[in-house]
Length: 355
Image (tube, rainbow, N blue to C red; front, side, top):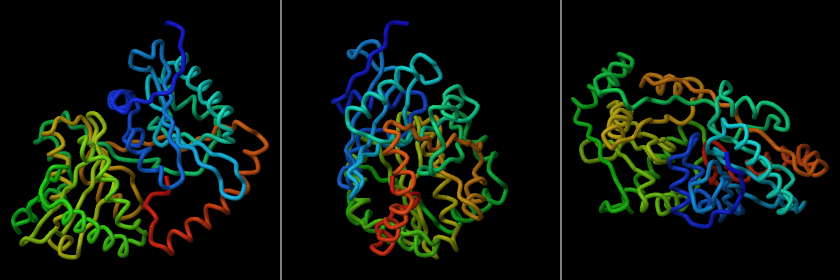
Protein backbone atom coordinates (compact mmCIF):
# COMPACT_ATOMS: atom_id res chain seq x y z
CA UNK A 1 0.00 0.00 0.00
CA UNK A 2 1.22 3.51 -0.83
CA UNK A 3 2.02 5.86 2.02
CA UNK A 4 -1.16 7.31 3.50
CA UNK A 5 -1.71 10.97 4.20
CA UNK A 6 -4.53 13.07 5.63
CA UNK A 7 -6.19 16.19 4.27
CA UNK A 8 -9.27 18.35 4.81
CA UNK A 9 -12.09 18.03 2.29
CA UNK A 10 -13.73 21.32 1.34
CA UNK A 11 -15.76 20.14 -1.67
CA UNK A 12 -19.32 19.08 -0.80
CA UNK A 13 -19.80 16.85 -3.83
CA UNK A 14 -16.47 15.12 -3.38
CA UNK A 15 -17.20 14.45 0.29
CA UNK A 16 -20.74 13.18 -0.28
CA UNK A 17 -19.57 11.02 -3.16
CA UNK A 18 -17.04 9.39 -0.87
CA UNK A 19 -19.52 8.88 1.98
CA UNK A 20 -22.24 7.48 -0.27
CA UNK A 21 -20.05 4.56 -1.35
CA UNK A 22 -17.82 4.09 1.71
CA UNK A 23 -17.97 1.02 3.94
CA UNK A 24 -19.79 1.78 7.22
CA UNK A 25 -21.53 4.73 5.53
CA UNK A 26 -24.43 6.52 7.19
CA UNK A 27 -26.38 9.71 6.52
CA UNK A 28 -25.09 11.73 9.55
CA UNK A 29 -21.70 11.72 7.84
CA UNK A 30 -23.11 13.54 4.82
CA UNK A 31 -22.05 17.17 4.40
CA UNK A 32 -25.59 18.43 5.03
CA UNK A 33 -25.66 16.98 8.54
CA UNK A 34 -22.75 19.20 9.51
CA UNK A 35 -24.61 22.20 8.11
CA UNK A 36 -27.71 21.19 10.05
CA UNK A 37 -25.80 21.15 13.33
CA UNK A 38 -23.95 24.46 12.86
CA UNK A 39 -26.73 26.68 14.31
CA UNK A 40 -26.53 24.57 17.49
CA UNK A 41 -22.91 25.42 18.16
CA UNK A 42 -21.19 22.61 16.23
CA UNK A 43 -18.47 23.44 13.70
CA UNK A 44 -17.94 20.70 11.08
CA UNK A 45 -14.61 19.66 9.59
CA UNK A 46 -14.19 16.82 7.09
CA UNK A 47 -10.93 14.88 7.27
CA UNK A 48 -9.91 12.26 4.72
CA UNK A 49 -7.14 9.65 4.69
CA UNK A 50 -5.73 8.13 1.53
CA UNK A 51 -2.77 7.99 -0.80
CA UNK A 52 -3.73 10.92 -3.05
CA UNK A 53 -6.02 13.93 -2.42
CA UNK A 54 -6.99 13.80 -6.09
CA UNK A 55 -8.49 10.35 -5.62
CA UNK A 56 -11.34 9.09 -3.40
CA UNK A 57 -10.23 8.66 0.22
CA UNK A 58 -9.75 5.31 1.91
CA UNK A 59 -11.47 6.59 5.06
CA UNK A 60 -12.71 9.80 6.58
CA UNK A 61 -14.60 11.52 9.35
CA UNK A 62 -16.91 14.49 9.56
CA UNK A 63 -15.98 15.88 12.98
CA UNK A 64 -18.35 18.26 14.73
CA UNK A 65 -16.62 20.43 17.33
CA UNK A 66 -18.17 22.67 19.92
CA UNK A 67 -17.00 24.64 22.92
CA UNK A 68 -18.36 23.63 26.34
CA UNK A 69 -20.10 26.70 27.83
CA UNK A 70 -18.39 28.32 30.82
CA UNK A 71 -15.36 26.02 30.59
CA UNK A 72 -14.20 26.96 27.11
CA UNK A 73 -12.94 23.43 26.41
CA UNK A 74 -13.79 21.73 23.15
CA UNK A 75 -15.42 18.44 22.36
CA UNK A 76 -15.42 16.58 19.06
CA UNK A 77 -18.12 14.24 17.80
CA UNK A 78 -18.14 12.05 14.69
CA UNK A 79 -21.83 11.16 14.19
CA UNK A 80 -22.21 7.63 12.82
CA UNK A 81 -18.59 7.64 11.75
CA UNK A 82 -15.75 7.47 10.87
CA UNK A 83 -16.49 5.70 7.58
CA UNK A 84 -14.32 3.93 5.03
CA UNK A 85 -12.11 0.85 4.67
CA UNK A 86 -11.57 0.66 8.42
CA UNK A 87 -11.25 -3.10 8.66
CA UNK A 88 -7.74 -2.43 7.30
CA UNK A 89 -5.37 -1.89 10.23
CA UNK A 90 -3.11 0.47 8.26
CA UNK A 91 -5.99 2.73 7.26
CA UNK A 92 -7.39 2.60 10.80
CA UNK A 93 -4.03 3.61 12.25
CA UNK A 94 -3.64 6.49 9.79
CA UNK A 95 -7.12 7.81 10.56
CA UNK A 96 -6.52 7.58 14.31
CA UNK A 97 -3.32 9.59 13.87
CA UNK A 98 -5.23 12.22 11.88
CA UNK A 99 -7.88 12.48 14.62
CA UNK A 100 -5.16 12.99 17.21
CA UNK A 101 -3.43 15.63 15.09
CA UNK A 102 -6.70 17.46 14.42
CA UNK A 103 -7.64 17.35 18.10
CA UNK A 104 -4.33 18.75 19.28
CA UNK A 105 -4.44 21.51 16.67
CA UNK A 106 -8.02 22.50 17.53
CA UNK A 107 -7.68 22.13 21.31
CA UNK A 108 -10.17 19.26 21.55
CA UNK A 109 -10.17 17.38 24.85
CA UNK A 110 -12.19 14.35 23.73
CA UNK A 111 -13.39 12.96 20.40
CA UNK A 112 -16.47 10.75 20.44
CA UNK A 113 -17.12 8.38 17.54
CA UNK A 114 -20.26 6.39 16.86
CA UNK A 115 -19.88 4.29 13.69
CA UNK A 116 -22.07 1.54 12.33
CA UNK A 117 -19.46 -1.06 13.27
CA UNK A 118 -20.45 -4.39 14.80
CA UNK A 119 -18.40 -6.04 17.57
CA UNK A 120 -17.47 -8.97 15.32
CA UNK A 121 -15.88 -6.78 12.61
CA UNK A 122 -12.18 -5.88 12.66
CA UNK A 123 -13.18 -2.22 12.94
CA UNK A 124 -15.52 -2.92 15.84
CA UNK A 125 -12.97 -5.06 17.67
CA UNK A 126 -10.43 -2.24 17.43
CA UNK A 127 -12.91 0.27 18.84
CA UNK A 128 -13.57 -2.00 21.83
CA UNK A 129 -9.87 -1.90 22.76
CA UNK A 130 -7.58 0.92 23.98
CA UNK A 131 -7.12 3.78 23.28
CA UNK A 132 -10.91 3.84 22.91
CA UNK A 133 -13.25 3.69 25.90
CA UNK A 134 -16.97 3.29 26.40
CA UNK A 135 -19.04 6.48 26.10
CA UNK A 136 -22.60 7.57 26.71
CA UNK A 137 -25.06 6.58 23.98
CA UNK A 138 -25.88 9.12 21.30
CA UNK A 139 -27.16 7.25 18.24
CA UNK A 140 -29.15 4.01 18.58
CA UNK A 141 -26.76 1.10 19.27
CA UNK A 142 -29.22 -1.44 17.90
CA UNK A 143 -31.31 -1.42 14.75
CA UNK A 144 -33.02 -3.65 12.21
CA UNK A 145 -31.98 -3.72 8.57
CA UNK A 146 -34.02 -5.11 5.69
CA UNK A 147 -32.16 -6.55 2.71
CA UNK A 148 -33.76 -5.09 -0.41
CA UNK A 149 -31.99 -7.47 -2.78
CA UNK A 150 -34.81 -9.88 -1.98
CA UNK A 151 -37.82 -10.03 -4.26
CA UNK A 152 -40.97 -8.20 -3.26
CA UNK A 153 -42.63 -11.56 -2.64
CA UNK A 154 -39.82 -12.62 -0.30
CA UNK A 155 -39.92 -9.30 1.52
CA UNK A 156 -43.63 -9.69 2.12
CA UNK A 157 -43.16 -13.30 3.19
CA UNK A 158 -40.53 -12.17 5.70
CA UNK A 159 -43.07 -10.05 7.54
CA UNK A 160 -45.07 -11.39 10.45
CA UNK A 161 -48.44 -12.76 9.48
CA UNK A 162 -50.26 -10.15 11.56
CA UNK A 163 -48.33 -7.36 9.87
CA UNK A 164 -49.33 -8.64 6.43
CA UNK A 165 -52.94 -8.75 7.59
CA UNK A 166 -52.77 -5.15 8.82
CA UNK A 167 -51.20 -4.00 5.54
CA UNK A 168 -54.09 -5.64 3.68
CA UNK A 169 -56.62 -4.13 6.10
CA UNK A 170 -55.27 -0.62 5.48
CA UNK A 171 -55.46 -1.12 1.74
CA UNK A 172 -59.08 -2.35 1.99
CA UNK A 173 -60.02 0.68 4.07
CA UNK A 174 -58.75 2.98 1.35
CA UNK A 175 -55.43 4.11 2.81
CA UNK A 176 -53.10 5.46 0.14
CA UNK A 177 -49.40 6.34 0.31
CA UNK A 178 -47.81 9.43 -1.22
CA UNK A 179 -44.09 10.17 -1.70
CA UNK A 180 -42.77 13.72 -1.71
CA UNK A 181 -39.48 15.07 -3.05
CA UNK A 182 -37.95 18.54 -3.22
CA UNK A 183 -39.87 19.44 -6.39
CA UNK A 184 -43.25 18.19 -5.14
CA UNK A 185 -46.04 20.74 -5.07
CA UNK A 186 -47.54 21.80 -1.75
CA UNK A 187 -44.41 21.00 0.24
CA UNK A 188 -45.06 23.76 2.81
CA UNK A 189 -48.43 22.26 3.66
CA UNK A 190 -46.88 18.79 3.72
CA UNK A 191 -44.24 19.89 6.24
CA UNK A 192 -46.99 21.37 8.41
CA UNK A 193 -48.85 18.05 8.24
CA UNK A 194 -45.66 16.16 9.06
CA UNK A 195 -45.09 18.32 12.12
CA UNK A 196 -48.72 18.03 13.24
CA UNK A 197 -48.56 14.22 13.13
CA UNK A 198 -45.06 14.02 14.59
CA UNK A 199 -45.81 16.25 17.58
CA UNK A 200 -49.06 14.37 18.22
CA UNK A 201 -47.05 11.15 18.32
CA UNK A 202 -44.39 12.74 20.54
CA UNK A 203 -47.00 13.78 23.10
CA UNK A 204 -48.55 10.33 23.10
CA UNK A 205 -45.24 8.43 23.24
CA UNK A 206 -43.56 10.66 25.79
CA UNK A 207 -40.73 12.24 23.81
CA UNK A 208 -40.35 15.91 22.93
CA UNK A 209 -39.94 17.08 19.33
CA UNK A 210 -37.90 20.07 18.28
CA UNK A 211 -39.56 23.21 17.01
CA UNK A 212 -40.85 23.05 13.46
CA UNK A 213 -38.06 25.16 11.88
CA UNK A 214 -35.60 22.37 12.67
CA UNK A 215 -37.44 19.86 10.46
CA UNK A 216 -38.00 22.50 7.80
CA UNK A 217 -34.24 23.03 7.71
CA UNK A 218 -33.62 19.27 7.50
CA UNK A 219 -35.82 19.19 4.42
CA UNK A 220 -34.27 22.31 2.89
CA UNK A 221 -30.78 20.82 3.23
CA UNK A 222 -31.37 17.18 2.34
CA UNK A 223 -34.26 17.18 -0.13
CA UNK A 224 -32.78 19.24 -3.04
CA UNK A 225 -29.83 16.83 -3.57
CA UNK A 226 -32.20 13.84 -3.27
CA UNK A 227 -31.04 12.82 0.21
CA UNK A 228 -34.45 12.92 1.91
CA UNK A 229 -37.91 11.50 1.28
CA UNK A 230 -41.16 12.38 2.99
CA UNK A 231 -44.00 9.86 2.97
CA UNK A 232 -47.62 10.08 4.08
CA UNK A 233 -50.47 7.66 4.45
CA UNK A 234 -53.77 9.31 3.62
CA UNK A 235 -57.32 8.25 4.45
CA UNK A 236 -60.36 10.02 3.02
CA UNK A 237 -58.12 12.87 1.90
CA UNK A 238 -56.49 13.38 5.32
CA UNK A 239 -52.86 12.64 6.12
CA UNK A 240 -52.89 10.25 9.06
CA UNK A 241 -49.34 8.82 9.22
CA UNK A 242 -45.89 9.98 8.13
CA UNK A 243 -42.29 8.84 7.67
CA UNK A 244 -39.21 10.97 7.05
CA UNK A 245 -36.33 9.01 5.49
CA UNK A 246 -32.71 9.79 4.63
CA UNK A 247 -30.81 8.43 1.64
CA UNK A 248 -27.07 7.70 1.71
CA UNK A 249 -25.88 6.00 -1.44
CA UNK A 250 -27.88 2.79 -1.78
CA UNK A 251 -29.06 2.87 1.83
CA UNK A 252 -32.32 4.32 3.15
CA UNK A 253 -32.87 5.02 6.84
CA UNK A 254 -36.07 6.18 8.46
CA UNK A 255 -35.57 8.87 11.10
CA UNK A 256 -38.87 10.50 12.12
CA UNK A 257 -42.39 9.18 11.97
CA UNK A 258 -45.78 9.09 13.58
CA UNK A 259 -49.52 8.63 13.18
CA UNK A 260 -52.81 10.05 14.35
CA UNK A 261 -55.57 8.10 16.06
CA UNK A 262 -57.21 7.60 12.67
CA UNK A 263 -53.92 6.30 11.34
CA UNK A 264 -53.68 3.79 14.17
CA UNK A 265 -57.29 2.63 13.81
CA UNK A 266 -56.94 2.08 10.06
CA UNK A 267 -53.47 0.46 10.43
CA UNK A 268 -52.18 3.13 8.05
CA UNK A 269 -48.78 3.03 9.73
CA UNK A 270 -48.35 -0.61 8.71
CA UNK A 271 -49.09 0.10 5.06
CA UNK A 272 -46.89 3.21 5.16
CA UNK A 273 -43.83 1.36 6.41
CA UNK A 274 -44.37 -1.49 4.00
CA UNK A 275 -44.61 0.95 1.09
CA UNK A 276 -41.47 2.75 2.34
CA UNK A 277 -39.60 -0.57 2.22
CA UNK A 278 -41.10 -1.70 -1.08
CA UNK A 279 -40.73 1.72 -2.69
CA UNK A 280 -37.11 2.03 -1.59
CA UNK A 281 -36.40 -1.27 -3.29
CA UNK A 282 -38.05 0.00 -6.49
CA UNK A 283 -35.82 3.09 -6.27
CA UNK A 284 -32.74 0.84 -6.32
CA UNK A 285 -31.85 0.97 -2.62
CA UNK A 286 -29.93 -2.04 -1.28
CA UNK A 287 -30.98 -1.81 2.37
CA UNK A 288 -33.68 -0.21 4.50
CA UNK A 289 -32.67 0.75 8.02
CA UNK A 290 -35.48 0.91 10.59
CA UNK A 291 -33.12 3.14 12.65
CA UNK A 292 -33.06 1.94 16.21
CA UNK A 293 -35.06 -0.55 18.21
CA UNK A 294 -36.74 0.94 21.23
CA UNK A 295 -38.22 -1.29 23.89
CA UNK A 296 -41.77 -2.57 24.02
CA UNK A 297 -44.31 -2.01 21.31
CA UNK A 298 -42.14 0.05 18.97
CA UNK A 299 -39.52 -2.70 18.78
CA UNK A 300 -42.20 -5.34 18.17
CA UNK A 301 -43.75 -3.20 15.47
CA UNK A 302 -40.44 -2.81 13.63
CA UNK A 303 -39.40 -6.44 14.07
CA UNK A 304 -42.59 -7.50 12.34
CA UNK A 305 -41.32 -6.14 9.02
CA UNK A 306 -38.54 -8.72 8.79
CA UNK A 307 -34.89 -8.02 8.26
CA UNK A 308 -32.14 -8.75 10.74
CA UNK A 309 -31.22 -7.21 14.04
CA UNK A 310 -27.84 -5.45 14.07
CA UNK A 311 -25.95 -4.44 17.21
CA UNK A 312 -23.19 -1.83 16.97
CA UNK A 313 -20.28 -1.20 19.32
CA UNK A 314 -21.93 2.04 20.44
CA UNK A 315 -20.31 5.38 21.18
CA UNK A 316 -16.58 5.36 21.98
CA UNK A 317 -14.37 8.14 23.34
CA UNK A 318 -10.79 9.02 22.46
CA UNK A 319 -9.00 11.11 25.10
CA UNK A 320 -6.75 13.76 23.55
CA UNK A 321 -6.09 16.07 26.53
CA UNK A 322 -6.12 13.80 29.61
CA UNK A 323 -6.61 16.45 32.31
CA UNK A 324 -9.45 18.25 30.55
CA UNK A 325 -10.94 14.96 29.41
CA UNK A 326 -11.03 13.68 33.01
CA UNK A 327 -12.69 16.87 34.23
CA UNK A 328 -15.28 16.75 31.46
CA UNK A 329 -16.18 13.19 32.36
CA UNK A 330 -17.28 14.51 35.73
CA UNK A 331 -18.87 17.78 34.63
CA UNK A 332 -20.62 16.84 31.38
CA UNK A 333 -23.26 14.49 32.84
CA UNK A 334 -24.59 17.32 35.02
CA UNK A 335 -24.40 19.72 32.08
CA UNK A 336 -26.25 17.22 29.88
CA UNK A 337 -29.06 16.86 32.40
CA UNK A 338 -29.44 20.63 32.57
CA UNK A 339 -29.48 20.87 28.77
CA UNK A 340 -32.09 18.15 28.35
CA UNK A 341 -34.28 19.75 30.99
CA UNK A 342 -34.04 23.14 29.29
CA UNK A 343 -34.80 21.67 25.87
CA UNK A 344 -37.73 19.66 27.20
CA UNK A 345 -39.21 22.77 28.75
CA UNK A 346 -38.77 24.68 25.51
CA UNK A 347 -40.04 21.75 23.41
CA UNK A 348 -37.07 21.57 21.12
CA UNK A 349 -35.39 18.24 21.84
CA UNK A 350 -34.88 15.79 19.02
CA UNK A 351 -36.02 12.29 19.93
CA UNK A 352 -32.99 10.04 20.18
CA UNK A 353 -30.50 12.58 21.51
CA UNK A 354 -28.99 16.00 20.88
CA UNK A 355 -26.50 14.84 18.30
